Image 1 (cartoon, rainbow, N blue to C red):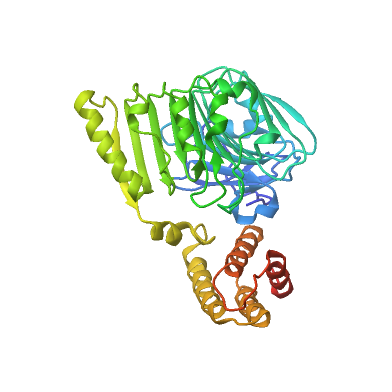
Image 2: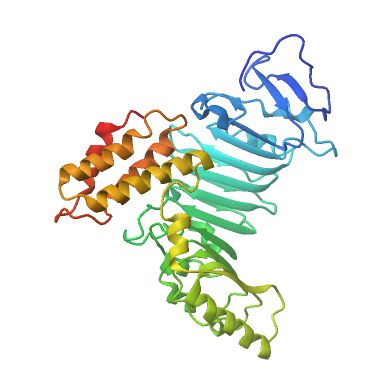
Length: 404
């Protein structure tokens, strides 16, 4: 929390390893109180709009004195915090990291204009960049040492040059609807030279086309999470030595494992059942002629109903109490819509669902977007009206009834 410390609080010494509250000069003299709790190795910094999601509040363009953390260490004596989460525009943590290594840095740049940052001399073992709602683009000079890079959100807003990461993870912002046209990765410039790539997507959202992988000529390791299409194009990447498939409901176009003669590590985890059984047999057959030198497994094969239960509704990331209430309200609305014989009946069902959340705490921007998606799903469910409920119509009913 951001607060003005009182005179009774302990002052940080040259190496603080104890839990407690300490005044720090983060953005000015004694501007914040840092609370260190038992067993917590992370610290989050960001604007007040994030509320309790961050530990220390700063305005997006605040100049931060990162060296205030030099005084703190873990009980074992390594730099504290180990993991930093920061939402804002001050990239001077990259200068700080030239002398004080950062184990994991999760940065959400809040930029008002195009910005160039230089991490070439920074010692960061894991750099995670989330490109959200920002006006400017980020041009990044990559670290020279060994590091991992992860980029999520609007990938069009990033350009990067320099030393390639040991592994690259991309989680582009895709739509929630699996019937939308496939998402194609944008041109990522020099990052196409990486040898290890992970692509992450939601299991039931807009698919990502694997046609874009042709831009990555050096890949020997590929990990896929979620919904993808054009799986058959993986035949173009016969040089793979590692292939991982996780949380994938659609795999029927996946080539046979003998497509990759150099493959020595293979994982299929939480994948659709039919292809999973085929992969399990192929894995055993391959082992008879060339034993696996790395880990090889096919596990958690899932039937179609499982995907709908786990990921079909937009409440999976909600706290359990709220998710339970949301699913109960969804069930009621779905049952009402199944009996609806007029648009007035449909409006009544969606309105009743919407107002159920007007008095609940914790319904903020993300939850409002989830509820809007739920209303769209409900509008597409079975009914007896005889004409479709348009997305615009359902959204209008939703907006008219909600107070969040």
